Length: 104
Image (cartoon, rainbow, N blue to C red; front, side, top):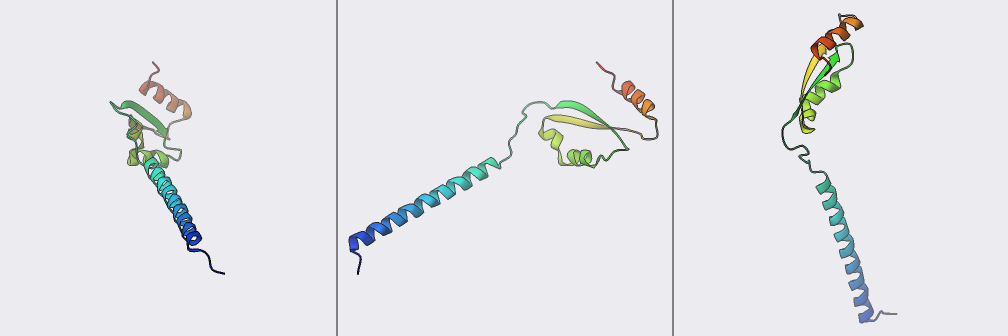
């Protein structure tokens, strides 16, 4: 049994409409995804100065990576690092910290 030409045309039109809607949804989803991946310049204005003191005993590789990649500047911080030598005892290191960075 053959389909009437009118029914065949309506089926093709409905399939075409459905494909068009799905394509538009896919394009919209990709556009939203790509727009959300853009970097934002979060912190306008002057950078806040901070000093990060660390002991050479610990694993500070992540700190080095953060400085190298500029993560502090991206967050609006002008960071400098200060290494506390391991050769000192814990009390000497604390005293060195207190002398170098007095509490306000």
